[in-house]
Image 1 (cartoon, rainbow, N blue to C red):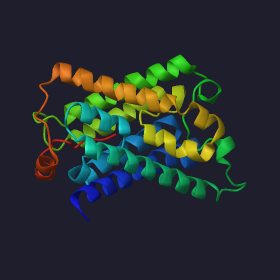
Image 2 (cartoon, helix red, strand yellow):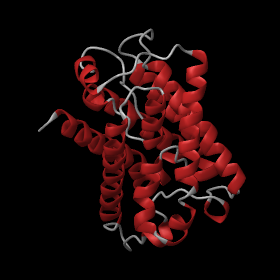
Image 3 (cartoon, rainbow, N blue to C red):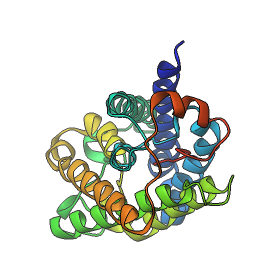
Length: 252
């Protein structure tokens, strides 16, 4: 398997684990662990994947993070597109597996009515928050996530601690926004469940693609304003740097 193929597989696996761990907890164990437990599940899944696949692909597992890294020249455009495809496939496979598991409960499980952890606003927001609140939340919190990813993986940051900072940031983000939108900050995480839920989830999906992408760009812009942007990473230099350096040990 080529170096590029390994990166794509790593992103698929990483996003699969993120969605299985986070959305799976919300769907299968939400009534037992509550919002705090769901927030921790997302953060712990991401933290683990930073160390597992970070040396291979950088552990973006989020199209908004990939966009932020693209805008700060930490990934080449030709790789970024493949990353996004792999992330969406991984999230969709994980959502399908969650449905299969949930269907084994007494009475079965219908994603179109139960929701499968899909994101929503208005009547589909956990606490009834409207469109503007949902969009503002997704933009601001995705910007925060991307800023943390970029800052924690900067050359001058302490080596080996990026995963902790990024994972805890995702926990914080979920604690803030689970009541608002069920928390996306990740288009792939939203696309996976929405495909199986259909109906309202597909109709409202645009917000959870547009909002996080705007947030990812905003986070990159803020980062560029407060940090000296590191030199552009080509495919060759990234291949050499990833196993030994902290550059691109990022996530989503």
